[in-house]
Length: 263
Ligand SMILES: C[S@@+](CC[C@H](N)C(=O)[O-])C[C@H]1O[C@@H](n2cnc3c(N)ncnc32)[C@H](O)[C@@H]1O
Image (cartoon, rainbow, N blue to C red; front, top):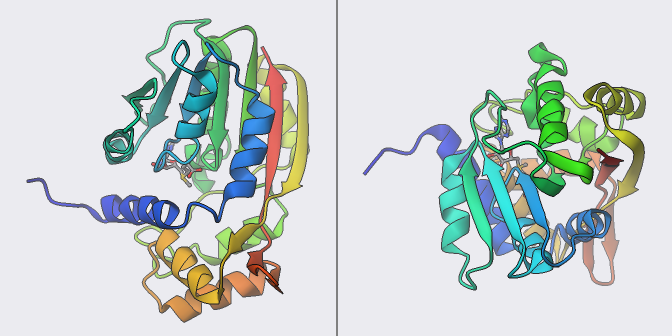
């Protein structure tokens, strides 16, 4: 058996947090599905599989005549997701390399959809080089008229400030969170330079919802594979994100930008 690296452990925890508490990020998922507007029979590329949080709903929308090609640089995410594909949905897992060149022919996809992954294409030191490379590939792989839907934290939002706060190996193990984010004008320019048209950018509130504070603490702590106490993980989230006790439980302010464009 191969040994688990620290990165393997990070993503195993990410998968487990999402798997144990699938209701927490429902607002993100529903908003992404609405904007992706996938129809039966379509071929959809997803980049950033994670635990399959979005993959399975996308596959249900595409149906038996459609298919989802899902890519992840963390190859163990793909294997773990496929073990959960008990309904044998039309999902094809494809290991992605960090060269961001995709083994997919030109004009293959009706839509390309990605949730909470776009910022991973760069570290602060690479600016937007990785994201630009990926966008050019997204453009190439789409059919004429094909749709691009990117959901990711926007620069200058509390969500970004929270990620900056967990950029230490203690709060996000093993490497912190060394990624920067883009704001509206920059994102629209990147899309235009890749050839996309009709690009629309909107920041949307997609709060994380928990049954109680204990659940919030456990989720946040596990999601980032934090090495501090769970109490400290929650305190950091409360410091940067709007925290609300409601009749249903706990609501944590979270927002994403939604970029929708066409080839
Ligand atoms: C925050 S997760 C999002 C996963 C899933 N879409 C979701 O919403 O739960 C980010 C994903 O990016 C992948 N990733 C990690 N490093 C990456 C890199 N250098 N380039 C591209 N993707 C990367 C991870 O394996 C992970 O699946």
